[in-house]
Length: 163
Image 1 (cartoon, rainbow, N blue to C red):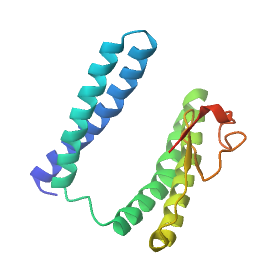
Image 2 (image 1 turned 60 degrees about the vertical axis):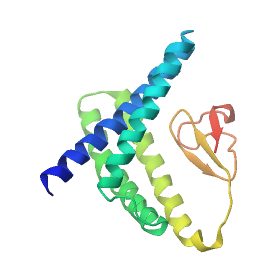
Image 3 (image 1 turned 180 degrees about the horizontal axis):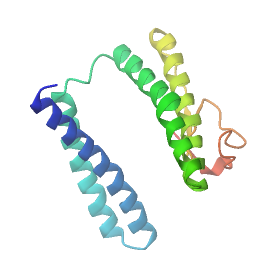
């Protein structure tokens, strides 16, 4: 990888992290009664998203939808099968039950993501429409049906967001 591609990847990674962090900060500010600070965090998060998107384009990682689905499937499969298992092992070795639960639920959800991508690859030409329901506790994604409870963390239906 060339030096410029390496630093573009670093820039993309940093901007992506900033977007998430600032969105979480905005939610916190909103809950604490600081709507103007929440707007500021959201505005800057959008700006950072623009920066990250530009870096991602320069990295040429945005391809056609079929290729993007395949790459996303591969990424989810790798994360679920390799990274999270190692994270769970370390958390258990250190006796950090909270981290172990987070990692095991995240692994389970990543496996669901991979399944959804694989199904989407098969349905790409059908233009199948569905509604997704995302658990705001663990990130589980339900395809088309709002579950009575989250199959990963047991959250109630009111903790799901419809997409």
